[in-house]
Amino acid sequence: MNALFPALRTRTDLPALRFGAETLTYEDLGRAAGALVTPILGAGRVAVWATPTAATAVGVVAALLAGVPAIPINPRTGERELAHILGDSMPGAVLAGADDVLPAGLADVPRIDVETAVDHHSPVSAASAFSGAEPDDPESPALIVYTSGTTGPPKGVVLSHRAIAASLDALEEAWAWTEDDVLVHALPLFHVHGLILGILGPLRRGGSVRHLGAFSVEGVARELGAGGGTMLFGVPTMYHRIADALGDDPALVRALGGARLLVSGSAALPVHDHERITAATGRTVIERYGMTETLMNTGVPVGSRPRPGSVGLPLRDVELRLVEEDGTELRAYDGESVGEIQVKGPNLFTAYLNRPDATAAAFDGDWFRTGDMAVREPDGYVRIVGRKATDLIKSGGYKIGAGEIENALLEHPAVLEAAVTGAPDPDLGERIVAWVVPADAEKPPTAGELADHVAGLLAPHKRPRTVHFLRALPRNDMGKLLKKALPEALHG
Ligand code: MCA
Ligand code: AMP
Image (cartoon, rainbow, N blue to C red; front, side, top):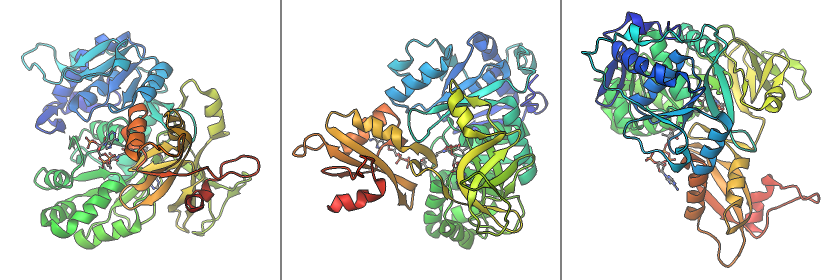
């Protein structure tokens, strides 16, 4: 039973999850998740309406215990994206909190309510609540997480029990992560960072997690300070906002200064923000580098000297190489030879759901092509310097494909042509910029209308933050769009 979460049996009276005022011990979690195992066993796959609540954590743990693959769904997902995810993954049921209002797109999927309030007088013990259905085969699929590519709709990344266990256990070693750790975070629960690292990570260690529900600097200060948090996980946008607030907030300075580990990931944390945090608190933020398809690849080990701008060393059992454009392996450890990061190891995904073509294209033999460009320092530390595809945008830590936004914009009746790029943004890392040729130059749509249109079809974080209107998109003689020439076209 529960190979992923042995603490469900051993740490029964200790706190596992806290979301706001709601706390679940391991016993509570075992009972709540155990009660769902039988109802979901026949579902084939189960969607989880991934609000930032205890219900999501209970639903996902239940699916893992039942051996039924779970598909976390962003509760703000727009109608087009939701239809794609459901059509692609065909869940037999959706798990949702009892009070959640589900959109029409989910009307045909049988709903199972997740109860987090546990009846302590029930004779069902946590252990007996499990059906013992958890798969023996570590290769069996555990989660299907949707991630954007440069074009087309998001792809479902199939992650096995093996990959999740391997990645979390490698982080245990790198960060001396133990059952005594209390993780504070405010990440969404429909991606790897917030769900696998942020919820399943503490549960695998037998520690606990305090989720803020929504990110706020005050919440971080409270939970890391008096709340007893020992670790903080966040995306660079969160650390940027923390760095902005440190000057006026002695309680925040104390809270960060007292934490055992401050970890940033999902995008590069600018050196300036590293420096501001260290100057104010005396603490260094450490970075780790991962991807939905690979889970965690590298990390700065706890206790290493400060390395702003570095994502650290390959984690245990992860092999990492740098490869030149022509496929030649780069052997230099010189801090300046740039190659694409390729990785292999037990942390890798199984396949893209229903996409053997995309799966095959993502690999060079056993090596997964990350698309991230990096150098290696003489001591092996990896520094990411860019990304191969300019059509992938990282905004607020979310990966967003330019192509999917362009397609959504083109569906707006007032849009004739559209191009999407990423622009540097101090808060979000990159900001989505839309370049639009209106169908009627006299009556262009408003920027807000286009943002709402994209948010409604895809998701709010994919909405353009800036919209430029042009007479025509710049193209070469072959008709190919020249994205680099867009700023000039604005003034042309
Ligand atoms: C504004 N809003 C709108 C619109 N305009 N909603 C609909 N339509 C509109 N036109 C709403 C938003 O929904 C939101 O509502 C509020 O306005 C503000 O949203 P926004 O400006 O987008 O962002 P934010 O609230 O300021 O969030 C910043 C953030 C967030 C908290 C840093 O970006 C975030 O949580 N990022 C985490 C991304 C992440 O987890 N990435 C991991 C994937 P409301 O305020 O009500 O919510 S990468 C990964 O997993 C790999 C493995 C890795 O390495 O980690
Ligand atoms: P996703 O596909 O949403 O899981 O995002 C994965 C991508 O996030 C990686 O391919 C990197 O480009 C980026 N990423 C994750 N962690 C870091 C980091 N610490 N520094 C720079 N980029 C990162």
